[in-house]
Length: 386
Ligand SMILES: Nc1nc2c(ncn2[C@@H]2O[C@H](COP(=O)(O)OP(=O)(O)OP(=O)(O)O)[C@@H](O)[C@H]2O)c(=O)[nH]1
Image 1 (cartoon, rainbow, N blue to C red):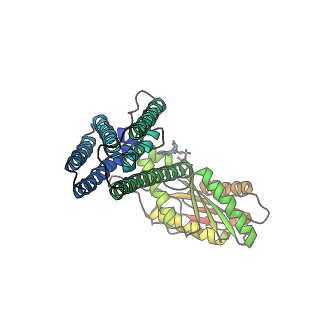
Image 2: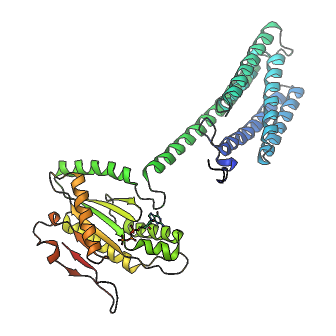
Image 3: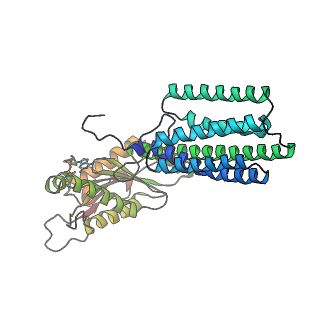
């Protein structure tokens, strides 16, 4: 990263497990609340079992999780995590040693596993895992070497154990869902970044080409027409020079929006690069594409971009080509590009059709349809040539 670049905000820094730091702490805060509520359920169970000391321990446990929740809200994350570790270890140890292995208190150590697994430092994760395993085995040894301090009835032990199992299931399910959703979000974000142009939201060149190949196959299978349109903002360099690059960007976005506004469901719109756009119109022949392009041209001409309230008038030149049977995409692009070049050469703000697209039409130079031009407009009158 260049030194002048701002460092990313803590909430967007990505952990090694693919989750942002902010998301991780959000998850941990929710788990702290969940644990605080679970402790209250235990408190009620211990009171019902006539064990006020254990109920008090649960009250302290619940308060500890609430404090951890608040601390995480204040970004005292490290202290909060230490508190939560201490609470879980104490609770699991006390339950297992005092009530016996059958109470299921040791299951709580397992809830650390998902959090440890996404640690940014593999060495720290390994150390935490070894510590957890050692703690678990120690509890197992302690619980099986000495008799529990409290001799609970099998029914009471089953109640406590099942409660632990339900709580651990709940926490695991939540963390698994949380991680899965984060991964899905990240995948969608990556897909968007890889396929769309960030300025306009249109398909980028690579994705447009990929989708175009599929569309050509479909058109060939069904014998339906398909048209390609290349569009380029006129004198765009002047817009940048006169109004600045940011306004230039807004003009690009504005024109992209107007093009998208004229699209039907199956039409593909892409940003070909710079101030150039591309459209693939399924079920559309050269004549249909010409009409569509003329609508876009006229819309752009009549709708100035107003980035800061000030109107920036722009026009668009378009080159149209119908993809004919046996024609390669490369060939179609060359034809559309030649038509666009013709539109630029003929004075801009107009649509030209590659001759092959309108087989019944006379040569390009001979057909001109006048489009509305304001009286006294110094620009050449827009026309459609085919
Ligand atoms: N603001 C902005 N400008 C861009 C972007 N991409 C390309 N440009 C500029 O677009 C301008 C294109 O200029 P030219 O290729 O000369 O075309 P033009 O001025 O539109 O002229 P004609 O196409 O012949 O009408 C260049 O100045 C580029 O720097 C972009 O993403 N944002």
